[in-house]
Length: 220
Image (tube, rainbow, N blue to C red; front, side, top):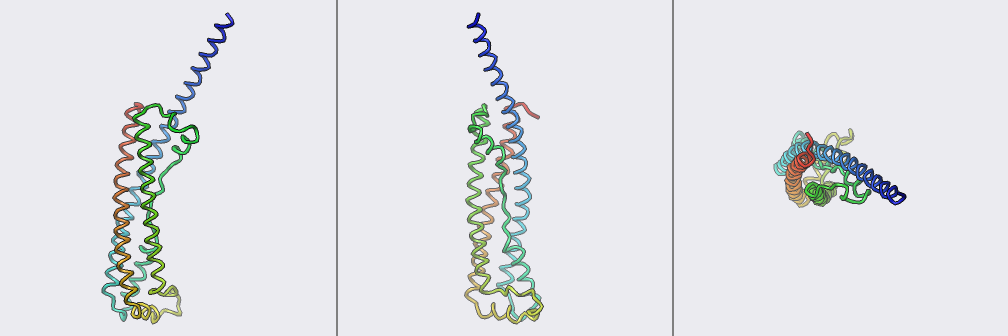
């Protein structure tokens, strides 16, 4: 009798643990869907901004390449384009709240559906590749900003420089740096384009993972 009581208690405890883990799994699954939906929204926003950024950088290259340093309006446009599109990266920080919790709780073992587990793991591995491209994005933009110190007047917007004399002189006296600036802007556009190609793929992948999760777990 004692043995049976202990054995039944063991079974009950084991069943309780399975129930608790199953409930946690469902919570993690719903949380993963929310994270992926958040990523999708972020990507859509940043890809729109990225398109505008590349248009702005195109205009910046054209403004430099056709600049007459005597044309104050054109010079003003050039400065505005650089400050708007040459100094602000538009990147996505992927939502890793749930995947971090899963790792802390013992890895993906709590996601018992192998198909879903594999999809989620692959998605976050791809997100890490995007982070590597972001590093290149920041590096190229920082290089452009450093180069701008040689040809742009950082006191340009101060009233003492309203006549733009120094702004014109810096550009006129540094043709090689201006050409390097144009070339590096072209490189930055290519990096941004490659990055946003990755984001398009990530958006499609996120939607695919959400579809798989809902199908495998019979969620609406």
